[in-house]
Length: 140
Image 1 (cartoon, rainbow, N blue to C red):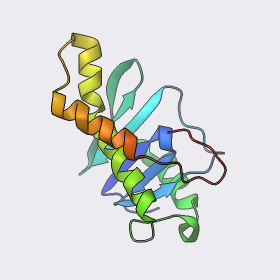
Image 2: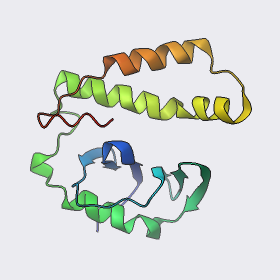
Image 3: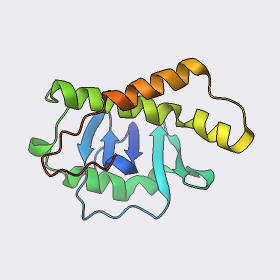
Image 4: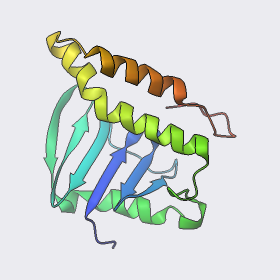
């Protein structure tokens, strides 16, 4: 198994990143219900769930995600160096949205407003995303 220093899972994009190498995961891989994302780095991490609190995870919990990542054919997986300009823009925009989702969750849970500059940048990120999937699957 691959040595893991960092692992990120973005369920909506079927994306698993291990040690900064992104791979799109097979549609045959089933993520747990209501899992939104996983963040793991430097020996610690958490799972983020829709409609419930985050939960701590251990390195041993990562095995199915690492196996799915390893099963994704490296020669068919775009890396940061092989992404087209639009694919890179899409990845950067989706990453920004993911990283700032907590502002929206905080607003929904507490009523504290999202800072205007974050709202503006989130809208710019959404506007920058263009579907590049030839199958027409626009899930994002």
